[in-house]
Image (cartoon, rainbow, N blue to C red; front, side):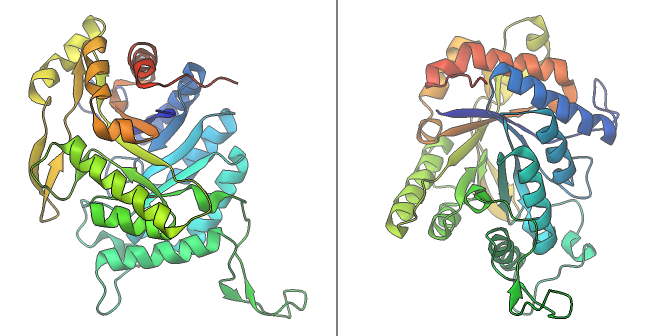
Length: 344
């Protein structure tokens, strides 16, 4: 395990016990938690993107603000729903954010998950072409976005206003190396293979929209191995990155026990359900004493197969609590996985 980061879903609202009651608080606390995580030696600050919900929706202002307040920590998304995106405008925003960060952006993208709005992408002006599915449209947007961030020309030059230039112009600015830091959020083994063929890194979460009857971590480890095999066969020039997400909640004091003792009994095993009309297997949460969690994570074959572990955090419990949670993982659990804290 080379890197450990946190993944925040950015929830906000006036619910009982919430310390993140407004959108403004969610944004500012996201920045503050990233600063605290860097001080702890944690390697990454990642944010989930959802639309029409009380969660983070426009990640680039947040990531740029974190970039300006930090020096080392990776910043990223997990994931941006490409059905909703203007690929060229997104390429400009991504490059600008990456330049501000000094090349620390790790951008997770995907077809996305179900959203609260019916046909929400159409409200943004994006509708599948005839014969296309939502997933096809997301992949089409992804293809154009990836071309744009790697400097390909995408718009015909007008010699009158382009200094006499002809041919296709790339979007500006460009940030060298960003094209190798694009991750695909794969929900199946098949999409992981597709991502490897195209040279995108693999981001795998706490659910897969398929089920073969084996434990979640074994199914995810199979997905990772298929990704690696395909990457090698494709002959890409750079090495891939692979992340998995886990809910890891060490119980160290009475405050932790008050919040999570019930979860230890309720969420300590895989679950199978239906999402977006497909059978899905959901990975268990890791809740309990740190020594036991270290042993369980060491036996998690997908965690062992990945180079990056993203810890989902209960962001509505506030910065102080989540910094304590990350510190407990970094202090009591992560070293047993082979991880060492990053420092300036």
